[in-house]
Image 1: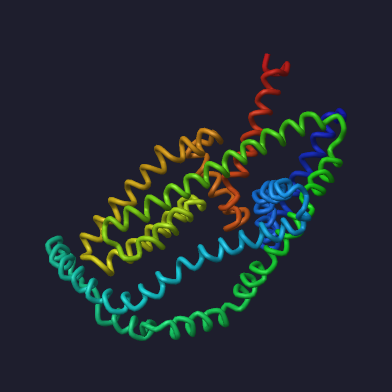
Image 2 (image 1 turned 60 degrees about the horizontal axis):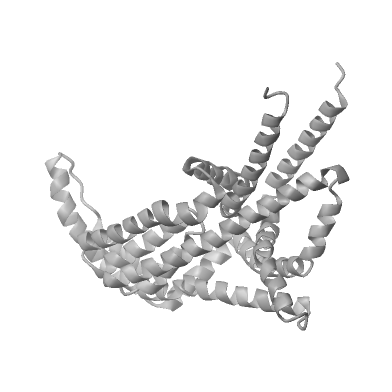
Amino acid sequence: MQFTPTQQRAAAWLGIFAVCVWVLVGLGPVLMPFVVGAGLAYALSPLVGGLHRATGGYLPRLACVLLVECVFLLVALALLTLLIPILVKELPLLREQLPLQLQRLDAWLAPMLQHWGVQTRLDVASFKTFLMQHFDGSMDQVVTTLLSSLRMGGSMALTLIGNAVLIPVVLFYLLADWERLVALLREWVPLRWRVPVDGFMTEADAVLGQYLRGQLSVMLALAIYYSIALRLCGLDLALPIGVFTGLAIFIPYLGFGLGLLLALLAAVLQFEPLQALGVVALVYGAGQVLESFVLTPRWVGERIGLHPLAVIFALLAFGQLLGFVGVLVALPASAVLLVALRRMKQQYMASPLYR
């Protein structure tokens, strides 16, 4: 059986695509800093170009790259420090208040379970002993425990430290050579494909730009909402938890879950259990409604056009292939794939196969 030249080219492209997928899956951990660096470079390159043009070329591009990257790293470091007051305040309270809260829970839950024929009680004493052994209320013990954990998981610690050093380096080189790299990749495109590829890249760039602007707007609005709402409810750590929750929304579902967990822990340690559950449920329930039905559909969803089920599938699929980095790039990558599917649909409907 002989194949036509068109079928041979299609088979060759399918083979190349399969090899690329196999390489990506096999080199997932190694590619992580490069994927993160490329994503950050794509997002920050307009700022570098805008700064270079705003100064009339007075600042060299390398200086603009250094300035933009330093500001970005300082902002990222400042956001990470939001967790410090939470840890400093919550760990001592966890040691003091959690056994009392467990006693109250046991006193409320045990009679109810006995009514249903379940004879069980919470072992509050053992849990209190565990807390006394692992949390003495001082940051010295926390740091010692953390360092011990890092020594036990040396490979993971080295990976985290290596990525923390490598990502800024990759980001610097990509930002410095971004325009040249884009032009170099374009040269590899066959001349007969230049027009459709340029059109696809322009449309994908527009969709990704809309996604980033919309996502940043949603994050800022939710950070303001959660901070104000938690403060009005009387939570002491309203500002760091609210800002962290709003900004962590960038990681779909996982970010909201982490913020909810932190708020619930802080509320339980500060209020009565039922009051804490009511406060957190009210604030985060309203925030989820605001995000899902108002902010994201208007500022992100309408611009990308992804169905909620497609979002969930994309998160699971990319997470399975690339791990945590896959979760981060799932939505923008899905937006680009959606642009490709739209163009394939247009070509199919214009072809004789559709008629």
